[in-house]
Amino acid sequence: MQAVTEYLLSRLAGLGIEHVFGVPGDYNLPMLDFVEDHPDLQWIGSANELNAAYAADGYARVKGLGALVTTYGVGELSALNGIAGAYAESVPVVHVVGAPPIEMQRWHAPVHHTFCDGDFDRFPRIAAQVTAAQANLTTENASDEIDRVVEVAVRSRKPVQIFVPRDVSVANVRARNKIFNIGTSKRADNGQLTAFRQHAETFLASATSVSLLVGHFVDRYGARKELRWIMESGVVWAAVLSMAKGVVDETDPNFVGLYAGSISDRTTREAVEEADVIITAGVLLADTPTGGFSHRLDPNRRIDLGVDDASIAGKTYEGVPLAEGLKAIAQVLHAHPASHATVFRRSSNGKPQSVDRPQPDACLTPDLFWKRLSRNLRPRDMLFADQGTAFYGALNIALPAGADLIGQAVWASIGYTLPATLGAMLADPSRRAVLVIGDGAAQTTIQELGTFIRLGLKPLIVILNNDGYTVERAIHRPEAAYHDIARWNWSSIPAAFGADDTVRFLRAQTNAELDRALQVAEIEQRLVFLEVEMEPQATPKFMDRLIDSMMKGANKSLDVRSERQAMP
Ligand SMILES: Cc1ncc(C[n+]2csc(CCOP(=O)(O)OP(=O)(O)O)c2C)c(N)n1
Ligand SMILES: [Mg+2]
Image 1 (cartoon, rainbow, N blue to C red):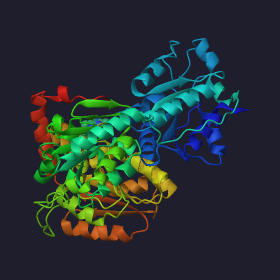
Image 2: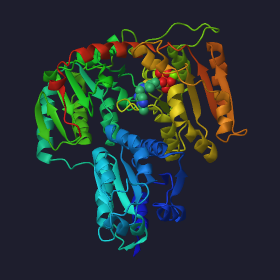
Image 3: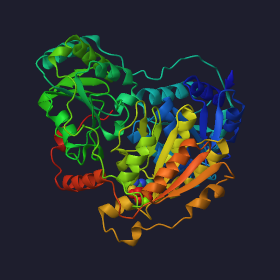
Image 4: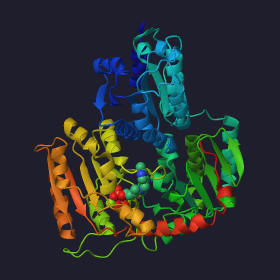
């Protein structure tokens, strides 16, 4: 026998979780005792529940699963935006909520953190809207329900919620030894898979050029290995959508850049759209990643590899999981490589466009900043870029091999990346983390800086201080006061969050200052907090193109309907 919480924690630890994020409350305190005493788990107290959810999301993106514990009502609702973001971006997070004791719930008692109307189903109803599965534990159902929802999280790559009444959390259940494997997806239908491979073979036989457009599901469903195998064939030109930047090795000669519909670089766009066969792998063709639905991917020339099925020019093969689909394509391409095109020939090198040569004393612009920062990135770095000018600047740089860009391209909640960086660093301490976040976004989640300092983590954190909400200025009435924010003294922020000499503060306003600051950061052994000042209306060129295209796209609700895909 073991306590319900012990059982739950053994499940999480068995799936590779080593850190649990969250905020205590009287309904979850007995659970936290078990976390505290667990030999393989470390409690990471967060400044608030939203940050905990973001941190668990960042952790899950690197480790495959994340977890947080909050209290009833006040705690879980504070986490809700982070949980919904995990859903939108397909990140498996287990959200455990300490709930009032089960007898209180049965009496409909007017207890704290409720509306005192006896409705204990209200918050589970909310959770059902933003999670793939929910469980209300009782002593009778606890082990079955824990297994059921954790399995949903792992298989669907979506968040789940588990309500654990305080008394149930310490009650005994029978232990079991069921094993889950992260990375498992639905089993392939062998007949369908064979039919798909044969069709792909004939479909590709006469193609002299093949493009491959990669989306984030390739990462979420653990299919990077199969993708690399395709790249090794040397006969496809690969591009990524913004949600998948870093999934293809950008130093590969056949990597052709970021595809975002009409706002892509011309060479990238032509390589993707004009190939004889266009293969899409695990893509989500949402508005921002497609430059406002401006993608042109001829359905008749397409092979689409979805999460659970694949299709060729509209003919669908059910039961072909993404990794299997990629493997089948790799087999076909490796069997007849000579018949397809070879190395991609770049007219303007296929990589992001260069920007003007910087003047040392000139004020920094986003494009100059990113050009300089990208020189400092190393293989396997984790680069985080928050919504705002940061994310759109980051999309336009070339990443070193094995480096990843982490951000929220679709949910796009400002402030996400600061706690997500914390989570990701704990998930893989061997990788360096570089975070670039706007002043507006940072003001929403900056409290988690205290946790970095408390844990002795040493990322490079860059605050882009452009005096407010620059991306919003670019969209609508740049001079409006609602784009302004309080002017913080960023140099005193680290001390306010507990730094003594554990943080190095730097500031840069010109190219020369940025150069010096990054040289210092390169050798600094402490957390580096770098404030980069820019003009309030300085925007990355890529973002200008995106906003322009999105505005046009919004006016014509176009062929989106014909492009609408099954969301996994
Ligand atoms: C939680 C949330 N609230 C509001 C928005 C709308 N929004 C998108 S970008 C942005 C401004 C970001 O400002 P900042 O972080 O300073 O970045 P900048 O564009 O100035 O570089 C806002 C308010 C959002 N995406 N998420
Ligand atoms: Mg700003």
